[in-house]
Image (cartoon, rainbow, N blue to C red; front, top):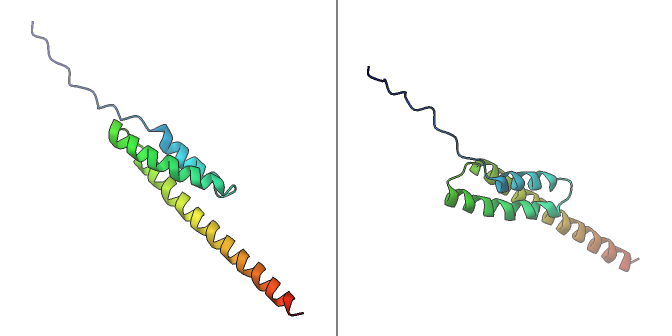
Length: 97
């Protein structure tokens, strides 16, 4: 009797990098707690490096965390500059009263 070789099964997917998921979660949390967006950016950069080194999946999660984190940091800085401008203007106007 001859045995028929069984075909190999589907390839197993690469595991998702946990740091990439943490980057996205921190960036989403940065919507409510702005300093968390900075953690999302740091974790996103670390996750992308780990994904390249370890051949893992999750680059999309890391990239989304980076984009959202940088966007929230820029919006926070713009808000602080606007608030500072308003305060400086109000003190300037009050100085002349």
